[in-house]
Image (tube, rainbow, N blue to C red; front, side, top):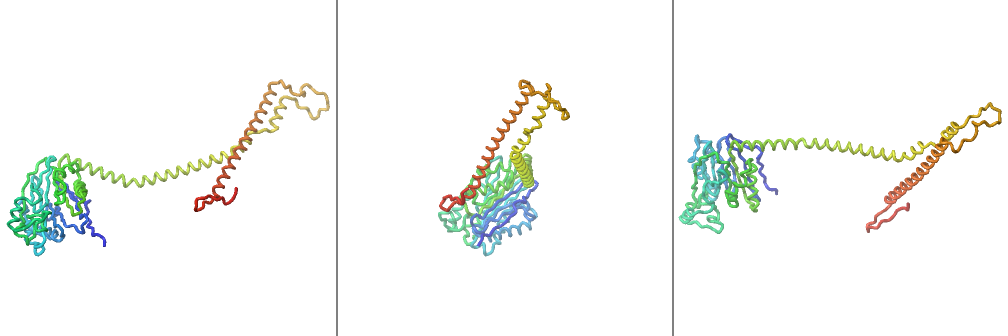
Length: 415
């Protein structure tokens, strides 16, 4: 059987007038995601939170529904309303709340203040000028006050700091069978926001178990995209080989400088996506140009081969050792005897040419030069034809060889 996968569209980021919101959550190697997030909606405006059901996903879903029902009835939400919402959810858990419980935190962001209420091990961190302010400023482990409460309720702690081996915190919702050792006591407070406040991180117990609040702030302070910041914190937790549920919400306040940087980042990202979307077309055009260029180069090479093979024939054609040129030279130096002449007397003009004449020497030198050129071209043609024959023979010999499975080479025919 395959593992159940919950798909959430994290690309549709919710932006408000005063902050950006990003989140990340993972079931790890567990079958179900037992942590539910509260993100701003029509009923719970600007209210964020996390409900951790431990090893049960049903109780987290029930608490989310009860909180939604409570806030629908509230006209004004303040610090006291957040506390009463948690108590209302605890009272209406019903039978499932007797043996099971959960940790929860609610956080409301207004224009100039931040309100929160929390039970269990869920914490939030406010980054103020790079300094981490933990909300509430209390350890997630069992405190000295919790020990007094546990002794009064005759509860025990095991080596993993679990109350009666099942409950993580003395202030959890539910776990009615552990009363009065476990009570839904919430920590609530109101924080005045300033211009130095940068972002808020709300996370489940797993993050604060492995990463300190200051380390979390330092690692994501320069990341203006809250989605990327939340994912980075999740990766940091899983780098410690944590295989359980992880849930993180990052709320970054809008400031003039940060907002400009964030918008520039989004513009760069959109321009990169546009460039990538057009790059396949450019790639196809480049491939077509390369293919056309290769075809042109191939045609040019074939043309050069044809010209080189016909070069010798053209050379012989251009080299004209015809009698006309020789006879024309002799005619120019001697007189022509008339056919009608019957006289046997040799005139001075019909005498043999003078061997010491400059013009006759030029003719003889030209003839010798052409004969030498013919000999050289003939020898070069013979050598070239032999080389071509040898190359053809080697190629044919290679094609007629057969390689046996043992690696031996056998000639099929003798060339």
